[in-house]
Length: 398
Image (cartoon, rainbow, N blue to C red; front, side):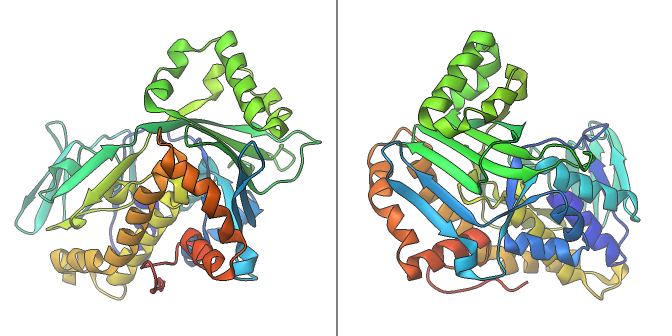
């Protein structure tokens, strides 16, 4: 998402852009995501929000509880701002809209090319796939995810710590009699978490196609990675029963889950960098600041990265851009916003996906107050909406 959005935005600034995609034939697949108001604002600037509104599902309320009925989360966008909402979309829908725009743009989109290393020399960055030279460029943007080997070649202090928990997910057709819902979660400590979110239709689906519901099931990473090897009809039946035992309302939805292959694996890493640039190279999106999905900010932050970078290039001729200075300025511009969300993600994750006991105990006793105390609720939704740049004060300006 970061790479596609940045390529589009920079191309529209008049810059010549080559976009390298490792996959030979990109397909509109992927888990559902919650597009926040700030990410929606970026897509509006790109002229791409309207088609997504026709595919996704508006989400107002986020509600999560325990099997005993104790409320853990109860937040509403409209209580923060009457016009605000989250947009539940299938990742494939967002990527399909971006790809459609790319095909109509001036971007030189090269699929099936897996860049593996780069060399900076003078005023150029040379990019390679193995020993094959792909070209020389004035700047290089790395946007290939949390587990990027290209980022590791940057001479910047960095770390990428894999979270001990991951997830299985799928998008299932919403049954005709299934209740209307926003984002619904059920927690048993931090060891079990089931999430349901409406995500509308995928890119290319017929208008009459059933809307999808994204299902998220938290698991220790070792179990996620060994899932398909240990699965089968009996394994899938056991898993579905565990889900029903935790959240009975999901039982009708699980009728659409018939094959273990429908469940895809997700793993996450906490990526930290001292800054996101080195000379003429910049890491954006999850490549530069990957985090857990607890705050629903991955796609949002990626889109904002692209928007900020394009804004710094606005009105300048490509040949006149001082890329090292511009990328250093980007790091300064993004520091407060990305630092806040990185810290918040690291702090929240053990409360929702871990083997800890104390953190989820405290969560269950005190988080529910956030929905009842107006000031706390405002801060919580501001965080979710993607606008905070500090723990107490500071708001993002796009």
